[in-house]
Length: 374
Image 1 (cartoon, one colour):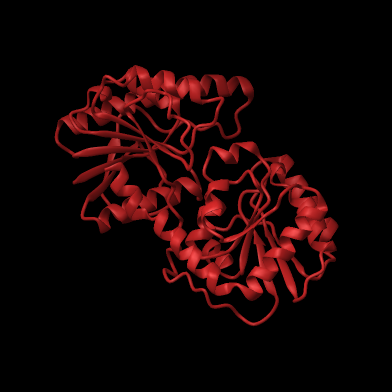
Image 2 (cartoon, rainbow, N blue to C red):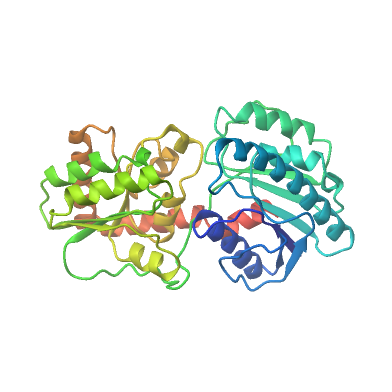
C-alpha cells in the first residue's frame, strides 16, 4: 500500500521526528510504500529515504519568537494554511498519488480544519493520530469526532493506555497502544555495561514541572550499598528554563558523582547518552502524563533501561511490567526510598527486569502500531 504521511510540524529533533521514523521504517518492513506530503520548503531534520510531495498553500507558520498578539494572528494563518494543505492533499489523492494518508500528530483543531476542506471527501482512507486526550480536551475532541463521523473514510486513532471513550458512542475512534522508541544507530540497544558506578540518567527537554531539584537533593542525601552516579542532561527552550537549569548546575557542580550536560542531544549523541546509563529517571509529577503517553518512558523501554517514575507517568505500564520503581510522592524520604529500591533492582534483579522489558517491547511494538492503524 502507498501511504502518505501528511506532516506539518517543524521540530529540530525529538518526539515528532522519531515518531515519523517509526512510521516510515515499520511500514517499509511490512511491505508498504511510505511517502511524505509536506508544505512548501518543509525543513526535514532527517532524511527518511522516501518520496516527498509538496502541498500547495504556503510554508509552515511557527510561533517562535512571537508576542501574544502575533500568536493570535499566526494561529489564524495556521488554520488557513492547514485547510489549503488538506485541499492540496485531496487533489493528490484524487490523482492516485497514494492509497491512504496518515496525519501523524493532531489535535481536535485538525478535525475542524478537515471539515472545512475537501479532504473530508477523500477517495482514500485518512488516518488521524492523536497522542493522548486529556479531560479538558475530551469534550472538544468528542464534539469534532461526532461531526466527522459520517465521513466513513476518516479514521481517528488515539494513542493511549486508558479507555476514556467507553461511553462516548463514537464509532470512528480507535484506541491504540503507544510504540517504543528504539535505537537507530546501535540497533542492538546493548545491555552490556562498563565497570564502574551504577549510572542513573535524567534526560530530555527540561522544564520546571520535571521536579529536578528535589530529585537532586534526594540523590545527595541517599545512602547506597554500591557506588551510584547521577547524569543530568537538559535541553532548554525558554529563557526561564535556561536560567533555572543553569542555577542548578552552579549550585550542585561541586558534587563529584553528579554530571551535568546542558545541551541539546540529537541523533547518535542522544542515543549514546541513553545507552551509557543503567536506568532512566522521570520524576515528572504532572497530571497530564496520565493521559498523554510519556515519550521518555517509551524511549527507556525501547532502549531496555529500567525506570524510576512518578505515579502520574502512565501508571498502567509499571502495573503490568515490573521494569522499575515508582516515586510515591515528592517528599524527600519517598524519593530516597525509590532510588534505593532502584539500585537494589539494578544490582540483584537484572534477569527479571530484562524479561519484563522484553515483554513490554513486544506489547508496545512498532508492528502492532502500524497493523492497528492500517
